Length: 83
Image (cartoon, rainbow, N blue to C red; front, side, top):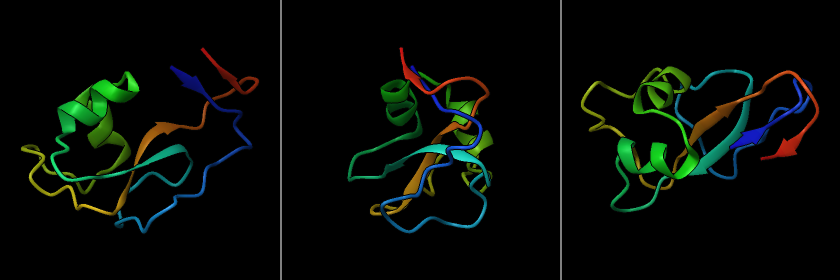
């Protein structure tokens, strides 16, 4: 699980779609075969968290775009660390 200082927002490597939270601490670029469940599992979050961080993702997760970045972790309070 990753933690990020609240003054350390990330910059996505690829384009994002409107609807990602403004204060994102980590992005992931969607690749072929990704599903909400796989992305969430990879980053230790729930599928509902993934949709909360990216409000444009529909309930069925049918609208992940390959090559676009999705937010997988919000910026949190506290020192930056990798747990």
